Image (tube, rainbow, N blue to C red; front, side, top):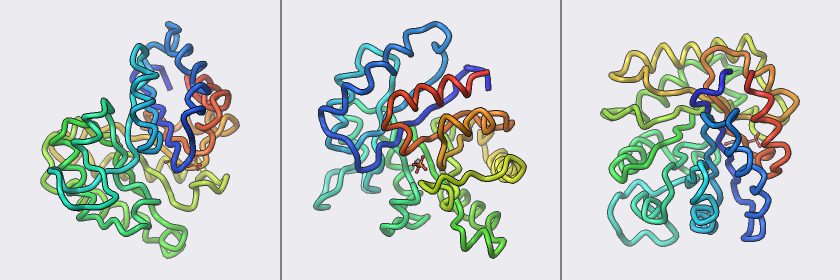
Length: 250
Ligand code: 13P
């Protein structure tokens, strides 16, 4: 991959405390180097650290995003929830929507569609996650599942240029297993073809997620059509995250 507008999303999931912020100092330093001036790094810490991250990265080129949001765009009686407006208010610019770990907690494709609409209303950029489970893959349902997630997730959404689509096969998340390049390329092409059918769908960048690490990223970045990575476990370790970034830029 060339370094033009390549995305590296660090999804910290339910990890991190205020002290962890210092671990990103070297990543901030990296973004100051000319060689990496065009890459886009987005840190998605848990809600509790969003404000700290915004402050910490203020003078850098790093963006901050939340890992989820409620579908209701206005304030309301939803105990325990955070909406896009609140995320925007904190200074974050991105939000992950439809991650398999939040789908597992009950998010439906329709709710994901509502979340995307409400995030767009708040002017957030969206990292929209899709992916098939191992069971669905074995049943040869991958395409059907991906298509349904795309169709319902993006239903009646016009400003698609503010979206990044993250393809994360569930069986690859946290398992150390990544798809073979040939299979991944096929699925990326399938996603691309279907996104291109939507108005401005060609503006959506596609990134890959699932067990990305410094050892496999070089190979993964050879796949045409991939514009970056969403990294879970390895993003918690700045040395590994930096290695991933360096190894994916050819
Ligand atoms: P891992 O990189 O830990 O497999 O997680 C991937 C992921 O879920 C990123 O959103």
